[in-house]
Length: 145
Image: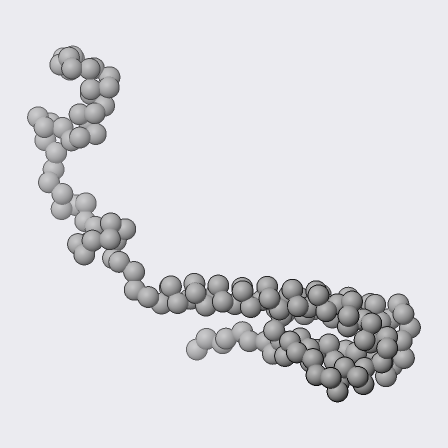
């Protein structure tokens, strides 16, 4: 049994942790109220789940939370696009692995079996040996040793 790794967010787990850490750091350095902190974190996690904003929740967001959302919106949108393309590429790789590939790298139906090739005799060398003989000895016969 294999467990599929799924996340409820449109961004990757790593991007989610990085973005949320940056947002929390920004909220704590600006000393926002706990209500603003909670509303901003809730809104931004919802935005990372759906990728959309609705007017009602955006209007109820405090001014500091709205400003922070606008600061991080581009980063979140880029992360969503990057994650979508990475997931699509992973799905293509998985689909490619699932399709049967040819038995050998020659793309022929015959299996690759070098042990069934005819043996080379000393009187008739193979093409590689003939080519090396021609390179080293030219058209002259091979010297007797």
